[in-house]
Length: 315
Image (tube, rainbow, N blue to C red; front, side, top):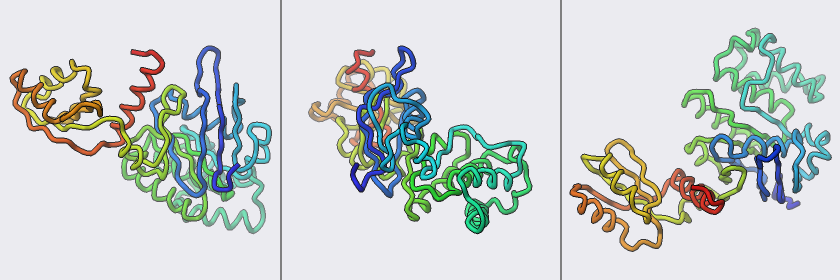
């Protein structure tokens, strides 16, 4: 295992009966970064995280996390990692301070270190004024802060977060990501799954999963600059007609409506994509303003998952 990597997986596979949830995954997560899993529900993100925590047995393949084989050495690993699930998993009938103290003792904290980490976590995650509240009475954002505090009490080297912001508002999500970057500056490596494009763009490196398959891996800027298509923005007074006309052509990969604008993904081997889109619309009697624009991460996602489905023979 490379000294610069905290996770290495080779051919990692997990089946549930006939369903292949994770399919021959090769993965390398560098130290000291936020590494993201991007994908829709059912893409294998949560299953992969559970495999890496040692909570699930792989059907095939292998993984090393912080130098430990998983799941064989999961017991040695658990004191060095933190894990935050999609759903709030702390105890609703316990107070905030009681939850943190209970989790701290599970991780073996005691004496001065226990008191120090409880005080630091309460301040860091703005829980001071909530210490006597029952967890069940907290708002979504407060529960999220409590869950993150619990997952980091023992100062883990690696933090695994499974769609941690799926039930909170945009400002709370922004605050949460500020907290993650502060942890990275302190030396923690973070693996986080998401289905939000704006969150994926915040990651240092990103893996895109589709139906258990790794279909793209790289820094967000690298993925966007290396996309296998060109993007044409179309403005028209009849956007639905534009969409209907362009969706019929095989050389167009995707058409998405954004208000009165269309975002059109065109095969890279098409010459003069702007002129070709404009000509297609003119023949249909539609006036439009067309220009080429830079690809977005959402464009990358559309293209790589489309290629992935085509490679598996799907429609």
